[in-house]
Amino acid sequence: MERLQGFVVKGGIKLPIGFRFCPTDQELLLHYLKNKAFAQQLPASVISDCDVFQTDPWLLPGDLREKRYFFSDCGKVKKKSAGSGCWKCVGKEKEIRRCESNEVIGMKKTLMFCKGSNDTRTRWVMHQLRLLTSYPYQQMAVGDFAVYVIFQKRKKTKRSEQRVSSSRKVERVDDVKASMMDFKVEFGDDNIELPPPSSPSLSEDCSETT
Image (cartoon, rainbow, N blue to C red):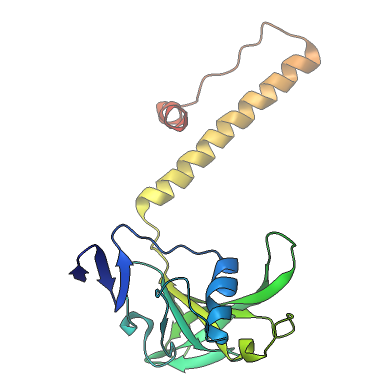
């Protein structure tokens, strides 16, 4: 990672120090992809041109620890080879809408990087965002380009699994308390006390969530 005065250069992209590029889908389409398609000036030079299907995702430019954004040709991609594997579509395309008018302006497709003869999924994910050619633009160049967002899903750690388990325990305790409250209301018995947590571990989990 190269440093210039007041800037940090990552993968050939110059960013101000402390800058984090976290655009919404709408911003990517209307302020970056549309400008790219019409050869207009971009808000910032943070998205590079790159054929995302030329090699493995971990060999593409940029910081592997962060989301990487690329302009590339827009095509109908169901399954396409790339490097040592292939990108394969998962699920259906989702609509991208304008926040102000709820108008559909583009589509978002999700792909998973797969390897092996059985197309085993890896943790690499890619989103393809494209503008609708039916959207009332002055030109049809919007169908030639797409924005691709590539990142690696994080592994599930034991700590995250423990948090899920703890939250479920707390939910069970809350369900018991709610049931006892309903019983008191229904039968009008003010002498019934709510049971304490069944174990010290539940008590600790409850205290951590407050």
